[in-house]
Image 1 (cartoon, one colour):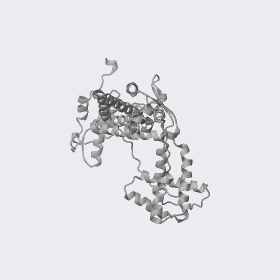
Image 2 (cartoon, rainbow, N blue to C red):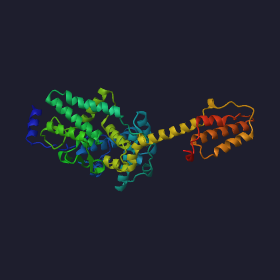
Image 3 (cartoon, helix red, strand yellow):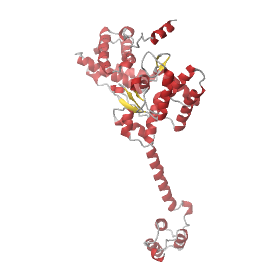
Length: 419
């Protein structure tokens, strides 16, 4: 009954979706020094000026989790109560502990960087911060390549999403299937982040212009994203079934803005059904890779994805660049053909005992004839090289029939004046 009452209130527009009040200091500050909780709270207020409003609660939770994990280790293992009690070896022990428990190096480095930023903040607040805490070095991170889907895997996922819409019998099943299909195409063909899909508003859609605007994305930057006809059709079909809602979010589920967890689990479930390991950000990697291989300029992909640095976009060129692949196979094919013209080892003539300098000079004379084509010239060069190798080894090579064989396999072209 409470849920039904809340639903009716939403339909009447009497309830607005707002960020819930959240006091992490009271929830996570137990057992920590009062000065530490107080300064972390001040540091949070400074940092959140650059956070998106729609993701504020999530960002606050992440901030406190990242900072308190390190500080609790220092307080519980070494009874640290003041800055002067911290030793460099304590931080190194923390790194070893995190590595033993299987945490990723990138996660550990993120915590160390947050700790360093907090030390700089305390220094600005006139705290006596030991210099050794300001010179902490992070671990060397591996440089992995983004994971992308092959064309066949994308086809399987697309067919699964389209099949859900076709097979849906009831109204709510069709609405959910249309939601899944629309989010899938936005993640894949438009390269949106999952948070951008979650926060997309109706006013950001320009269906006539086949584009949408992403508001205050990563680094608080806006950007324009274009949509294909397929994506347009998927969104229009969903909007017909969407109906009114308490907010102007594009995607609603049970009369509430869709959550990124729901989108993520729906995408993973669809991939599991067709045997494809997929998650939302992997579809974004796939979009970038496919655009690059289709000949799209790297600077256009940078703007399309909203990357601040071009070096971030260049990572996809290392993943799978069709141009590099084609150039490699084309060049290697040319190398193999040249080697075939020189003759395989088993095709070389047997080494004899009747070699003389006049025969090599005869071959060289034939090589100067202007009517010879390239293949004939290469064959003559191969015969001369074989003779010289035989001379250095103290052997003789019979080549009296070389010119006859070459003329039979590669007859010289008829001079133009005889045509």
